[in-house]
Length: 80
Image (cartoon, rainbow, N blue to C red; front, side, top):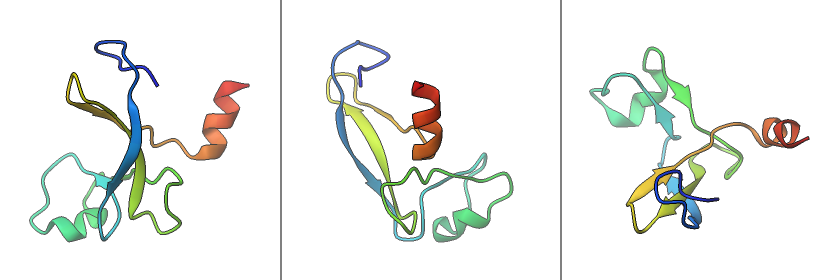
């Protein structure tokens, strides 16, 4: 994947969390319970069966991380 900021190649890796990786519109009082936050979105993208890791691309130059949280099946449909 190319970095959307500098257009250089990004490195594929993982972001991991013990209780699932979740985006929430507000910071949760207990981070481990963020999956129960109102308006939360699971970022599970197939990197782990139990959603405790997500694939993420990192740009060392820009120090940015990009997470595509579409399920693998949606990614395949989009590329057709």
